[in-house]
Amino acid sequence: MIRIRTLSSVAVAALVACTTTTEPPATQGSVDQYVADARRVAGEDLKFLMPVCNPQPAVRAAPSAAMDAGLARLINQPAPVPGQAFDNLYYVGSAWVSAWVLKTSEGLILIDALNNTKEAADLIEGGMRRLGLDPAQIRYVLVTHGHGDHYGGAQMIADRYRARVVASEIDWKMMETGLEFDSKMWDRPPKRDMSVHDGDTLTLGDTTVRFLITPGHTLGTISPVFDVRHGGKVHKAMIWGGTSFNFGRDMGRLDGYIAQTERMRQLAAQWGIDVPLSNHPGFDGTVAKLKARTAAPAGANPFVSGQPVVDRAMRVLNTCARAQKARFLIAAAGGTGEAYAFASDAREGAPDDGAKDGQAAGAPLHATLSDDGRPVAGAGHPGAYSSAEVPLAFPRSLHADDHAGLCAHGEH
Ligand SMILES: [Zn+2]
Image (cartoon, helix red, strand yellow):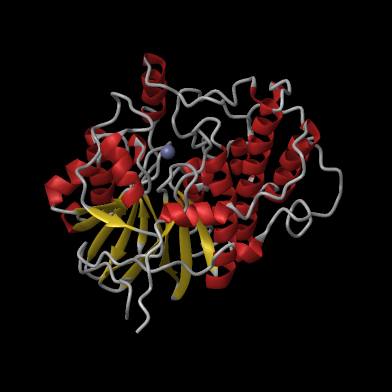
């Protein structure tokens, strides 16, 4: 019998990162072109992704009173009304950070736990009760990545309901040994519990969640894929687990992000992913979509965007990452650095810049923003996607001792 070896996600990331090195020399013109391309691909319906294209600082934000104050402002925005996106998927997040509840035949899976215990109690527990969901049925808390706006309430939920906390091995290590960001607005990271690797699945009752490790935003960001149901139809949802480039000048991360958005674009086509979601409502229009569902419950589900929209969303993020990489390359080559010399938007200090719902792109770049009427190329810049070398199949993991529910263990 052939034993399938486990590659770590870092190795996978490095492998795929190596496929993205054939790019034209970076110039301000190429930055402008990437941004213009992203804007064109985003169109009206995905313009909430365009803040990702704004110039980002070369240095990661350090803990500071200003960051705490910025976080407090984000956290204290009035929360949206909790709501039901699908028969089996509910939103109990804030105006800034998402918290999704996936309902299965044997309990609930909470996807992200907001900033702290108080917020988790108010919005997650409170929201669930408003929606007729019992928090005591939470079996798992998935932390999509190791930043406090997603893990802050996790330990409370785990302690109160004896739920298991799931994160990637890479981000568990980061949370244990050195947080990328910290703030007193956040409760401490959860205690290490279940660890997942790229391609692992978790099955609870009638529902299976597949975890894709999509490094970039953090090195162990998880983008979960699962089925959702509406009107007797099954759709496939994907939550992009980390969106913004708030890690400073780290070309490896940008390469990883470029590779992973391309991999997800291909997987979305292969698997028929037609529901693109985010862990920040500003990056998927969740609040407006929930309102639309409430206003017309019998109408078409606005969360079902269709597979071509998932494709476009991944291309927008991919192209924005290329723009940011080009900015850093220009600066490294002695360019003016002008491209990222000004603040990207009004949310500086925030570690994860989920745009406000429906918000268009922020700072006006000196890119050509008007649509020049060129047809949208199938793949952005010519030669920009070296897709053939991006692995579509991921290695199975072998950590069978983690939990019985984790079923993608090596040999079958
Ligand atoms: Zn983050």
